[in-house]
Image (cartoon, rainbow, N blue to C red; front, side, top):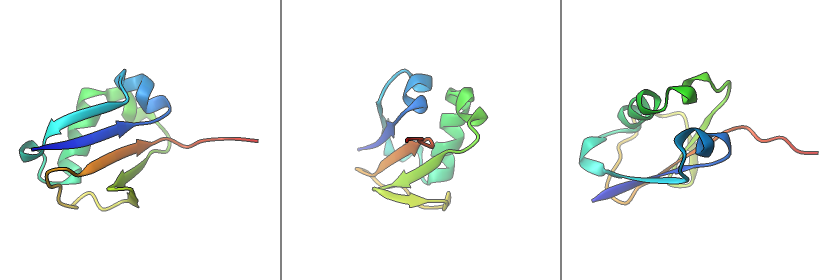
Length: 81
């Protein structure tokens, strides 16, 4: 079973994709997934602000368990006028 990672804005440019599907068994919690993504895409670590959403809810709980069919989104800050 898979988890889906969605990239938006500059994170999409960094990852060079808008979506990854990863094996849920490899990522027991959001912190493990976060570490994997920061290792795979080091430029993500240079972003001054990056919001994380787990199943369409903003979160700072990197101990949150991930289960098959979960969705995680990386949301950089946006500006507008």
